[in-house]
Image: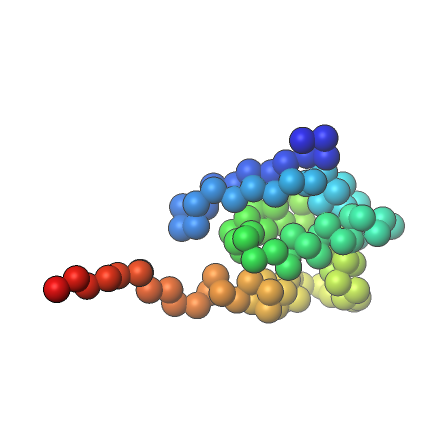
Length: 107
């Protein structure tokens, strides 16, 4: 990929991939300061995507921090990561719900 690709293996969900990942990384490296529109859109898209698990997002935040997510979502004056947990629950809530296996009973 010209603009980068990220691959993450989640034991519960399987393999996850995201293209155009360079914008996410460059936005995260700025620590919330002077994000371009593309970087902010990529960070929001990373959170909004139904195909990307909270584990993948947490792994990236563990390495780069969450300050740029606060800037991308226009959250000011935050000293803790409670907003980040809110974003994960709000936009990735389906990963937190109980999921039952698909079973077919054949007589």
